[in-house]
Image (cartoon, rainbow, N blue to C red):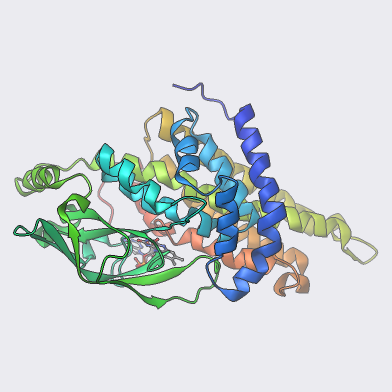
Length: 404
Ligand SMILES: Cc1cc2nc3c(=O)[nH]c(=O)nc-3n(C[C@H](O)[C@H](O)[C@H](O)COP(=O)(O)OP(=O)(O)OC[C@H]3O[C@@H](n4cnc5c(N)ncnc54)[C@H](O)[C@@H]3O)c2cc1C
């Protein structure tokens, strides 16, 4: 177990500096253009792959060889400080990789995770397809079905997934589907749909409020046939699990909760990056901009706003780092991962709004990046579990009671 310390080690400080410099040199100059075009920024992701920032080796190194748990959150804060839309384009494949890691056998993991990223010579993308139009928070409502065809040892997938990052443009789609509708959310399984599988197509591409450089679309599955080996975890394990659920034995809900809690600090770190970008910009602006004969920083109302912004960002970072450390070294007790994500999302939305206020009219127009950061921040209250779903998880954890 690593000593509980929030001090970053030498490797983490270097990583932070490396991503910061990539952010300044490559991402920030391109951010407004890709936001405006609302297209996936392949040239920027290519540059990230060329330096080793986009790739499964980077993710493996950041997540597995780090006893403190802090490396990945430090990296994400810095990337999203540079730009959240491009940050999401670079990190979107990580959702698919995490979906694979959550249920795969070691062989499946080694086969499919690298294929979510490809190589710098031939980039690939991954997509994690869980949500549906009528079922985002309410995962028991998924309708996408997976039916086993014993004669050919294939699974046949049918349904439509909604709001999928990299949906339809990915090489690897990880799909959560219903295998036994009578078991609600316990009757689901995850599948890998390999590249170029017939029957998988992109539905509508969404036009978004923020993180517009990331690609979000429907994924349509029309009689998609995949080999039996694409069921993550394997058929034997699935059959055993379903049998246990049918007998009324409790599934391993505790393990599932620990998994979700472990991924939430990463989303909190993304939100932190956006918040910090807006805070720093507003602070600089407040020291320069003069009204009534003095810098607006010397008006107490502006100074106090910035003091609160700095305090809230630090508070959110402490929660994110604590949760990241717990994910590696401890047990979550009161849904500390959800607390971190809840707080950081709210802080990002609030801080970016305050930053616009500090810039006045300049904050509302596209000459400055603050309006974009404000649009980008809001997603962190919504995806990977909304604000209210985090509250639900936390309130259940602190009370031990069923709260609906
Ligand atoms: C840009 C973007 C990218 C995304 N990327 C992906 C992706 O890659 N893969 C993927 O699978 N999904 C993805 N999503 C989907 C995302 O995770 C869902 O949108 C999110 O979980 C919310 O689900 P919903 O939209 O159905 O909202 P709903 O569940 O319909 O919620 C509507 C409102 O009701 C509240 N609510 C719902 N249930 C409760 C309850 N029990 N108690 C109190 N309040 C409740 C919610 O908090 C919310 O305020 C993405 C979404 C967006 C916008």
